[in-house]
Length: 405
Image 1 (tube, helix red, strand yellow):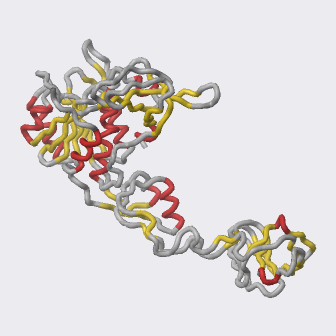
Image 2 (spheres, one colour):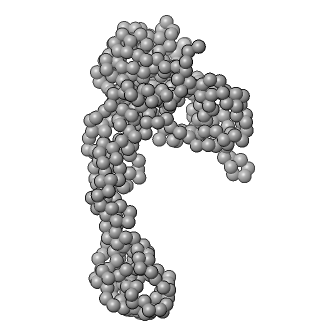
């Protein structure tokens, strides 16, 4: 019996063989979501820049408060964006949320705790030094490193960069990835099917997934089931891209020529992964260019891309997130017999019980050829090897929103 490789072990091993991209570019922050940061983001300023009011009220000197009914003269009004004058003895400044507090003031009293009478304000409650203030540098201190290279930038990071006045960031350049599909039976959408033909859905699903990583996708086209044609297509692609991804064509069938073509102009490592779906997986180099060979069934293609290829592509860009994606525990709304030697990733839907609790239940048809199951499912549930599931058990759930994020 051949040995099956656990997915974590495969990822760890494959990461050591990857070509890494060192090129970077400086681009506007508005274009940086999903890109890999190439240098430290260091704050050039304090946030807040100046100590300011946390709410609408009156800026005061706490030393002027002698009891809970102190009356102070209102000498100025300070809105956000304005700088007030120095506050004198027994004076108060009408102040609004976000406005810098004037020199001399050391607290803000809420307007709800005051009684206004013309140009005077009576403070009705005791106030402590620093109360209702946002101190300068409370959020971000000047000189602090906020983000480090290898971070895949999220919308919150873009807002963070903008908040310290940074208009552009240095990020790794986008990967160029060629997607190659093989098979004489494949035709592109929009063409009338002849008997025995099928539409080439894998190319479009992979392209959509790669675009979520900001990859520049290079279409090789549908390659005929011919060894020489496959070698030529792979060789031409290898000179243009950072990575080649194929679907199908790496099994032992007489019309599966990808395996032989890769070995003829590069080298190939075949993996038998301890996962279901997606046991057959290939990796290697074509004329020095990274190569990944995925199974041909649509579900297997989709799952192996998410579990293996996506983290490996991010690793090529120096991403910090090199480990397998993890889910979170959710109650199973089903029973299942003891699983086999492979870790199973079953397509599941989230269901809500009568008391509001959520659980997951599998789609009825778990065939790797049923592409519609990917549309109907909310994500994947993980069943470890040799594990029996009883209704109510907590099992790992990996939402597609996380896997494809």
